[in-house]
Each structure stands twice: as structure tokens, then as C-alpha cells.
Length: 71
Image (cartoon, rainbow, N blue to C red):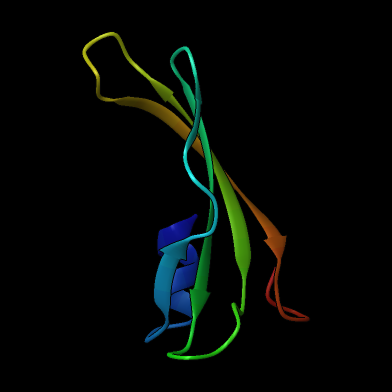
């Protein structure tokens, strides 16, 4: 999801919006791309599952807030 947003809005700086919330092998965090010194243009949430070997097993992303016509 982050790669798709980055391709549609190049030049924005991506930051994590919330700390990574972990429970067992599941992770959740938000991300926010924004121009330098400005508010986030998009807010997204990713959910990930970590495999037993510590690598990402799966990831699902959602757009929580986006400009009109982008989603």
C-alpha cells in the first residue's frame, strides 16, 4: 500500500503515525506521507503477520484518509 501511495504522490516524506502495536505475531501501525513542514496528505494503516522465523509473512494495507479522487 505504501508503494502505491508513493507512486501516486512522489516526493512526500513518509513517517510512521503511531507506534507499532504488536500482539503475538501480529503488527499494526499507521503511516503518513506529507510535504516537508506540512500536514499529512494521506493516512494509512498496515496490518502484518510475522512468521516463526521473524520475517513478514503477510501484510494488508488500508487507506484511512485520502484526497478526493485518490482512493
